[in-house]
Length: 95
Image 1 (cartoon, rainbow, N blue to C red):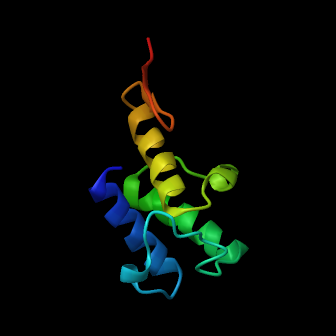
Image 2 (image 1 turned 90 degrees about the vertical axis):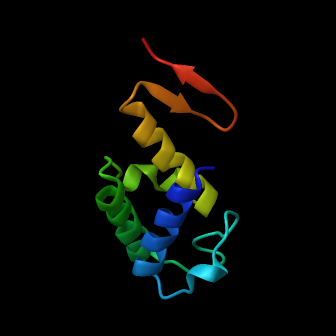
Image 3 (image 1 turned 180 degrees about the vertical axis):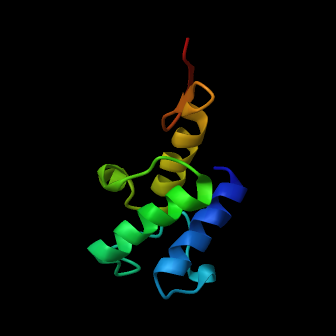
């Protein structure tokens, strides 16, 4: 996982939910661990869109349960602009 992306994702999360950045790691679950509600999740989605200048919306929420999941969605969005998409283990070049 890209550490810069992870740090920026954590920054977005802490701006939307009153939590200390040091208490967040890759496996932190937004709802179960941080008690995020639906409005918090929407705020996070919009915050990610602004922070990374990506197209991110509420349809991405099912794929964004942990910090690692969010980083993966962000990485995929950033890479799709370059024609590369990441899944959990591979990189695929698009024509």
